[in-house]
Amino acid sequence: MEKDYLETIAKECNLYDKSDINSVIRKIQALDEVYERDNLVEIYNYFLSACKNPDILMCIIQCTDRIRDKAVLGRLLDLLLLKDGDKDAFINVRVMCAKAIANLKETSAVTPLLYCLNNKDENYKVRLACADALGKIGDRYAVAPLIAVVKDEDEKSVYLRETAASALGMLGDLRAVDPLVSILETQKGIWNKFTFLKERVIEALGKLRLDDNERVFNALRNSLVDESPQIRINAIEAIMESENPQAVETIKTCLVEDEDDEVKKNALIALYNLIGREILDEVANSSDFSDSLKMEAVSMISEYEEDE
Image 1 (cartoon, rainbow, N blue to C red):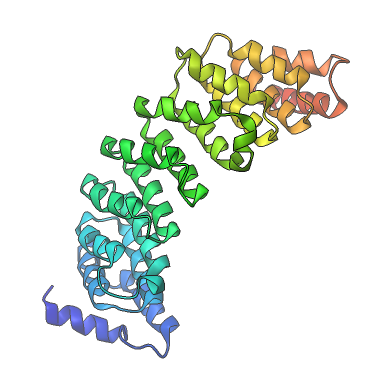
Image 2: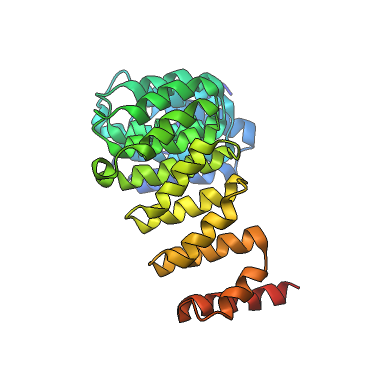
């Protein structure tokens, strides 16, 4: 499409009209009823460079994300980096750009994403979105910077460290094992306020599937006595996925000894996934378990029989 024609479409959508933004958004959203995919990519690309209104830009980015064509990557990166303009007014736009960039799965975006991630003067929401995007893109070049974020005890945003840990789990690189395990091995009292970070770390270790790594397994097993029930639940799930030969007995101990009903239910589900129907019968027919757990076992047996 010629630039003049693209500008005509922009004016037909009232792209530059700030008096009725909702009307502009509706017109942009209706473009896919008129134009084919290739034309839409050109139109959205032009709009991304021409529009200066954050609310309208959010709509355009959503439209590009539905198509997911790499031709818009350059414009999305320009908005993410936003070298000129009021960055505070465009925080949500830039966060959405990072999410759309992640969905393109283009490794050439890794360096700009790392630039934003490593800039401690950058808004934490943008850094969070960039960390998540790096995990979804899956390029190993991002592993070392993400590890640095997870390990950085001076990082102001613990949420960023949590997101970086989750990203490392998505990347699945073994270089992440030692720093992730070190977080779990740190004295519990120091880490109480970092409960969610520990949850994300356990989830990440579970995704790494290191059945032959005793240090990882021991760290997960020790997490079964953490004060946080959710950490114990996450640890159960990670141990279930580990394929470690000690997994069944470890989770059985948790099923019997843990004091939280929700943790016990998750242990029961994990054991069912590992060894099948027999654990359900054992719990349902034993006087050693609470009525609520026995009812859970009976309910699962009913579902099992229906599936049969």
